[in-house]
Image (tube, rainbow, N blue to C red; front, side):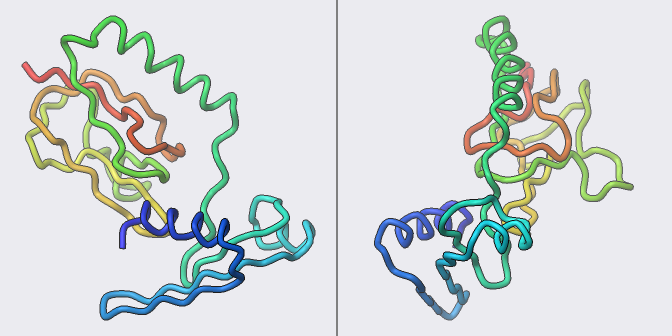
Length: 167
């Protein structure tokens, strides 16, 4: 089950009014429970404060959206690049919501840097979503022109991560 599908399931359960759902197949087992503990209990679990929270068994609750200032700065960085190079450069975009990492671990070198040539299918970064580390591969070859996201930053679905010169 993909992270986006899990998030859609959580949203559906939230709107349905159910307090608990358990799903088990041959591939996975998932339990979603609605907690209505007070703000102090939520804060002690490290979750965003809200009247009701959802928790996946063996996985953390979905992260709260990034602060508005961070979203605005990311949008202001991406817009000039899109305006000036929209016809020349292609974007490698995030296929999911999660946390962007440029390397496999803090001690490793980045998968790609500005000026590196990438091939189709080459790993360019990792996006962590609900404790799953997903390798993101280039859909096309070219030269990395710009990294649009800071390491260890939250990213949204379809957010541009890299600008690539396909020439």
